[in-house]
Image (cartoon, rainbow, N blue to C red):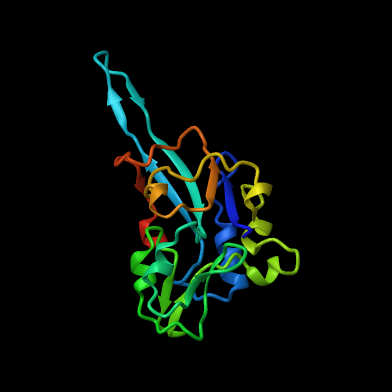
Length: 205
């Protein structure tokens, strides 16, 4: 089975959120609903030395993320009807005719990718723009990225698959085997760094 995935180059991302907004526009999503989020992560502070000089080790970086189409997706295991499933290309998608809107997929996913929409009555999430992929095009978020920080395709065609995304604030990759790979920027912190905080928490949750 071919496995598709995302690659994110954090050294190129400016946090403009064009990827997020293009997805919302293309999928015609409501204002308070999104398949992709751009996390603004920050930490550090100021220190005063004995001579009275102040220095800082503060940092900020961005992490653009949608569904990671995991090797071992927690959402498919939790789904009681088989609505949440992996397709032949490894993309995790929802069969809307089987989904009963129970929300177990949303509760199980450590990346908060699926969302149960009360408006449409079933779970919804990123499907890698499967209809565009079938026509030889890229997902709309990748096409819209002005900094060329996002890539998508079969794993063997991605720039680098040596390092799964495992930086703060993400959970350990061992939980589900996410197919999100990245090139870290200098500011990125280890996943266990509790000091790294999501500064736009109300926007992405």
